[in-house]
Length: 130
Image (tube, rainbow, N blue to C red):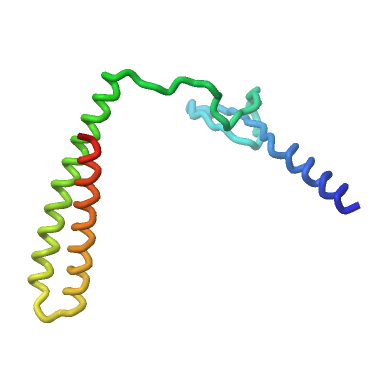
């Protein structure tokens, strides 16, 4: 009995998951899509949508495209490395300028460690590209 009820409920939820989509255009030409039918809206006939990619696709790119992507990635990583080094230097200056404020010194020390770790990670990533 319970399993029959469960199957019926499951069947109802799967049927209700197929939403109908309506398209309406107002007097100003603005297009609105909704799952609620309104006056003047037209029901769109949209087929079932699959969430899984097709199998057997060829996702390779040619060597020229890959080289361009690698060069762009290298450039971005180099820019990030430069910016991170600047942040590290500012954090070191803030640490030295903390004076007798232990909270400010602790925060600055944590910032220094964070930027040093970021620099290490960026340098490691750059070395993997070479």
